[in-house]
Length: 312
Image (cartoon, rainbow, N blue to C red; front, top):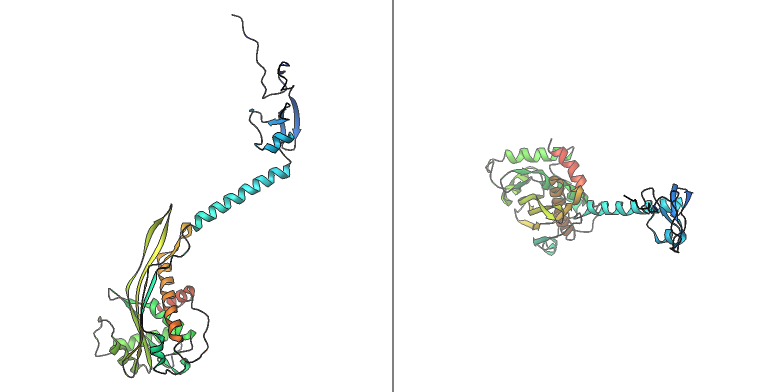
């Protein structure tokens, strides 16, 4: 059988000759570029660089127009740009859903009602801070820790007097509460309870509260999941001498406070919600007080550090 003549392989320029009848392609030549040896085809479109497998080594119009794949600096710049794009995409994926979505509601007293009682400056008031309780009648220290730090922020004094630390304040307060003969151990705190025990502690004001809800749930946000905290906090400020409630507030918050690949732990989500809620309550109370020095805003990290001390 008669065999057909072998067709030229245009991808390997130094092995065959192109047909002269086609005026568009000339004899390929071998060149050595900065990136290593490649093969080129000269024709109407200019020199197109080919790899050993015949695929274009650089898919840029500039390479086709100018007959080359660009300098080494240009190639490195392209690689650097691609890395930057990939880094931005990864960062966006990590932070997806991390922006907080606020959904807080508040009800309660007006600051003008507290101001009408003409309270003395904060540095003349001793305040007893009782533990906050959860709906299942369990003691929670996070509400007390946030309240203590906010009282100190506004210059209040902590009862009982003579306590060497905030941990000592909490221990002495709990001891007085357990020794109160008129209160059942597992009963929910009432205004008359904290007023009665507050007198024993030498306080003028007393703070207590409870959590109707405090938990974290995970909800889907696109391809990732977002941590959403649920808070229902009740806060009361009581005048120890009269037993009357000077100020009360209820905060409901269903804010999403974290998500993406770096989603915070549930305890961190709950701590942020409580800190934000109690900070806003004391900001409200401070407007009813005489002019006084106020420190920086209490942070969730400060609350975490105090919790470690109180829970030992």
